[in-house]
Length: 460
Image (tube, rainbow, N blue to C red):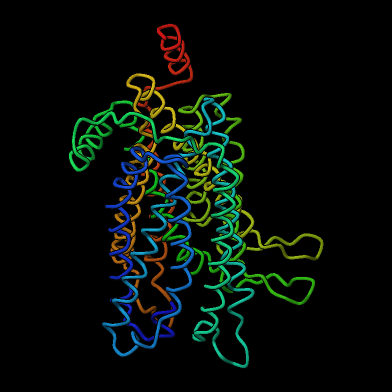
């Protein structure tokens, strides 16, 4: 938005720059996992990269908005500045995130606590996702004097500086509060008999050949693809299918809250609630059962939206008259099932991440090798590949259903709008169902890890 609206960069070049950075991230994450696992330092395997990568990420989150005059002379100079800053930003993110994810595996050795810590990580992730955009639009992008706020460059500078400082502070705090898990690894033996480059590919081959995480990798790829397709299309559903943009709630102070904001905000609340309850579900159903429960819940809710709105049982914009008041019935029903769909996803993602920690522990118990970074990197890579593919599929889906860009003056064709709902609600459910078929083959349960721990303990 900034580079196209404020600096005038062609949207095609802006999109290409972003795609390059995503590809770079997919390449560097497995490398970062290998580097972190094999680091020997006084401060441990994870913290040196978390601190340096986090501060690099913070600096770039400001510099990406502060384009020097030297690079403003042409489209190509702006493009290459955007590419460079994005690559540095993604590099910092990878340096922080992969060791950070692996540190979570190491902090919790208890089978149940792994789900708890991953659940809390997703809760705070959703809080940040909810608060960040809300703060940006509230404090930095208020239209004033008839000027569209997103075209004012200084607004981006102020936002970038604020978020950069906040990022740096939280990175330092995370490193300080987790420093007691930074075990000195300077004197640990190097188990590799090969050079670094060859050892990296051997490790990746071993992780991919390990039967224990195989179906989790397949699951997370499929389920993330489905979630991204739904999340990419749901904004079009809000606008064209449900017509939420026309609806407004009048707040006590005289402000307004759009129905779109309510619907979109409910997705993050649903995800956070799912992450909160996932620990209890794993205690009752074990991890595979909790994932199956979350997936079944998501499928049910999306199919209910299809049954209610695609059939016309409740029409978009329908209201319910109660005591002289008109309540937005369509919005209420939509938010109920839509938020619960995301609640199911909020269960699946933390629990599947905790599964990776279990798999990594099994590898360590059997071989003595610490591969938390490697397993977390391949898990993250599967998610990145799913996101990249599903964004392309979302674009193809819009074209395939006959969605017109730019929109005609009298709106989209009714058949195209109906097919939009069909793809979002039904196809999204079918993709989720395919992911549940995959996770059924996951072979590890609570009893397997406890048995292996006893065997290793008795052998020692």
